Image 1: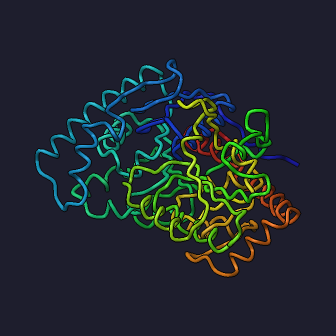
Image 2: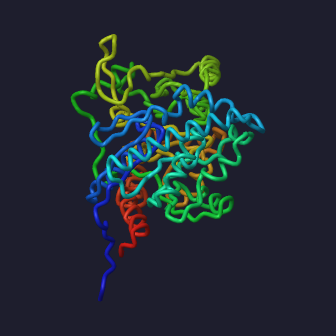
Image 3: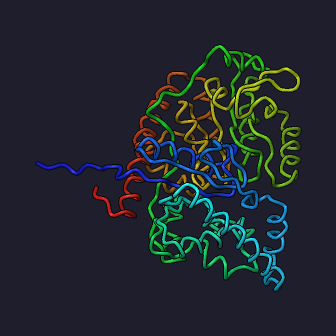
Length: 429
């Protein structure tokens, strides 16, 4: 009997490219996970972006690559919400493109790169010149690439009316023979094939389920007390930014209808960059509902430290072990990192059945409290039962953790990445 073994192939020098690799946005987090996996296979990874938190000796900082660079942002504001662009705007796009092409060539030559991994820059058009520059570099060099697409233009209403449709069709994403296209859900896979005629592979967002999650330690043991929660309070965690698509108003409504003074909703992250109207709406809902909601973004950061007032700043990983329930009522997600985090930390989840969840996650058998744009009586009663029954919470948590390990672990991404490299370099599997 013979066996087919998946190998990692020859060690490669791999260049990651995006507008930023910094902070806790989904693209950055998944890129760092891929790099960890690839380096574990023996490859070397290098980074180009406009904002970086990677080591200097493997990094090529190009400020113009950042989508919030003043020149880029000023140009972007004139390209969407209109049906045409001026000749001057075309010249500005081409000028930025030329400068970015030079930076890309320098990056490739400096680190002698053999394969590129564009992270979302050939999918969502937040930086038109960078997408065009990278497309031309790939066409001119023939370098193989694994294009990791998290969001496409057609998934965002704000990109519908634009003056750059010619550029969107040519570079977001490009149709080149040496690109392996990777998407994060099956809906994107189908739409990419339908709209662009491009095949792709689904590699979902993943977590390191093989490594046990961090728990309570000396630093985070006082989280409840520091956040003003009693030991018998129901710590209900909303682990997301405060932006409209997260559906936080549903979490507030759930707490209201639980009608129990022990129910405390803790929102971990600050508002996003979409204005203050949504925060104003939430504060009005909270006042009307007369529920206990804690905005703790001043006490939660990317690393443990002390803030200006001398208070402890915790990481999100410090909060999860103390939570009794996680709310995830998003209207839309490309995949759902917060859902995976809750499963990883063995916490029960109230989840809105957003499209990707309904198609790609729910059929796998996860035990969750599901809502569909409405906090129904059934949702309230299920939530109340879970909060009162520790044994039931533990049983759901174990089932979900095992499913997470099976479908969304590092092992899943490792196999699929090795296969992408094998396809590009003709290596056997």
